[in-house]
Length: 192
Image (cartoon, rainbow, N blue to C red; front, top):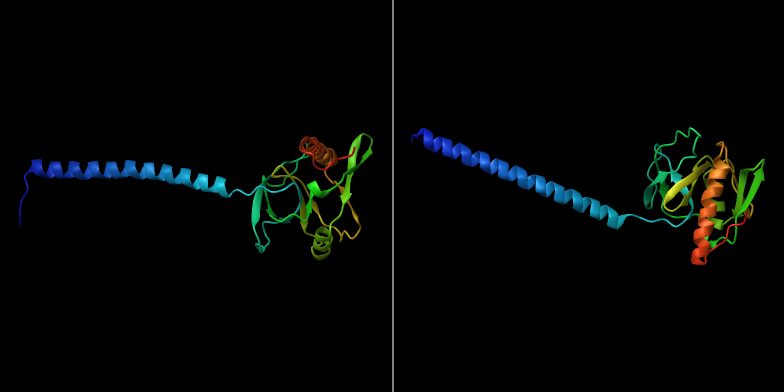
C-alpha cells in the first residue's frame, strides 16, 4: 500500500472540492437554463382561445378527451366568489362570439340581470347531454363568468342569468369591452 504525505492528500482534497464546486455552479447554470427553456416551451405551446362559451372541467372530473386548458378566473368584485384562481376548460368552443350578430342585455334597477344571444347546435347538444355541468364565458383567454347548466337549452336564444350579486354587470362590462375591440377589428357587435 502506497502512503501519501499530508501535502499530497491536501492537494487531492482541494482538487475534489474545486471539482464539486465547479460542478455545482455548472449545475445551477444548467438548471437556470433548463428553467428558461421550460418557460420558453410553455410560452410557445400556450393555447390562445377564441372568445366564446367553453365546457368547464371540474377538479373532481376525469380528464376528457381533447385538449384541456387552465385559464385565469376573473371574479366579480366584491362578490366573495370562492372559485379558484384557475379554471380548466376544454379548448373547443361550443359558441364563438365573433359569429354572433349581437347580444341582448336585460336591466332591472340599473343592474344587468340577463344576457342573451343566438344559440348553436353544438351548445344545444352539449347542454342536453351535460345537465349539472358548467360552462365558462371566455374573453381574452380568461374566464369572465361560469354557469351551471340547469336544463338543456333547446331554444334558438340563450339567456344567461347571474346568481352572483353584480355578476350580470360584470359580464356586461366585459362583453361591452369585447364590442369595442370587435368594432375596431370590424367583427360582431354588442347591443345595449
